[in-house]
Amino acid sequence: MLSVRCKICSKELISTSKSQCCGCPNMMTVLEDKVSALDLSDVVLLNSNNNLKKGGTLSNQDLEYQENRRKRKVRKLDFEIR
Image: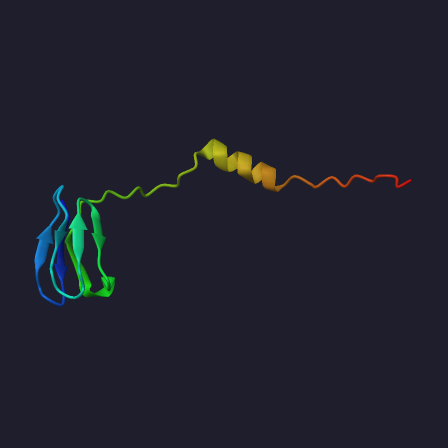
């Protein structure tokens, strides 16, 4: 559940499955976990339940593979021009 406030009109909106709009010239709109507005600097997030992962997206094997791949040398092929 997401809760946001518009700084211009001071209206607080709580996210639901329906789209909600504050109605002021900033046009802040809330839909589930998405917030949009003409100027997002005039929007304050009050409550957010977003769980962010603190780890990397690659596993240890993937990182090791990429490191070994980075160390490979480039082979230059010589061709005869006739």
